[in-house]
Image (cartoon, rainbow, N blue to C red; front, side, top):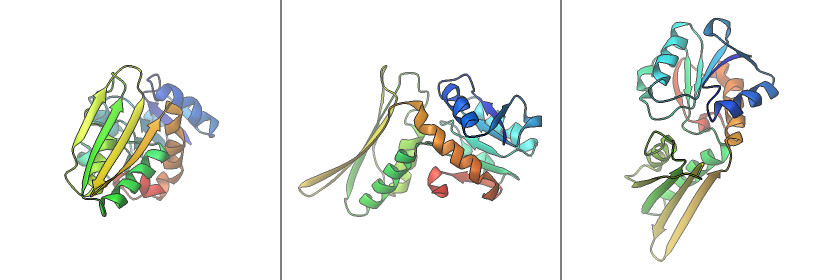
Length: 198
């Protein structure tokens, strides 16, 4: 598939580009030559990139967080957005949602590198939504971190911790490849979350 990768020289894009090529995709420079657009840029740039893709009739796979995706709810082409493309993070969200049915109290601690712009992270926000309750989120931004999240649930005499650590950005490539493979089977408009594909 011909893929326009926005953010190709960024922290995620510089790892994702070679991963997409290794999976058999060809990176192109413009929307005109693309069959899909992948965006890992910035919250202040992503909406314009997706608007341009929609206008060109090109479906999108978006991993940039910290922006309002609702504008694309009824887009005429597929806009697939996931706040996290690591399969382990998706499983963490599933496990947390299941555990929340049985343990009444929970908090989320998410830790990311100092340059991460959104706080709380998109993963933490989606995790809280999927748990179906008002879950406090604690955000940490420090040098030396990559992407980490722990969901701590509590009940009488017990706690349960569910944690995911993305130790390197290679963790996101399999999820993006999966999204590209299934893009043509998704309906027009917005689809949220990698778990929709698992």
